Length: 46
View: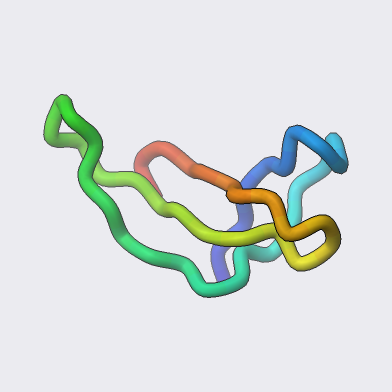
C-alpha cells in the first residue's frame, strides 16, 4: 500500500483508493483519501 502525508492529521497515512494521475507538467503522482479524516492526500512521484 502507498503512503502519503495528510496535512490535517500531520502524519503519514496509508492511502485509501489510490489513483495514478499525471500532473500538468507531465510527472506522475498518486492521489487518494486519508482513512482517518477523509481528506484528499497527494504524493508527487507516486
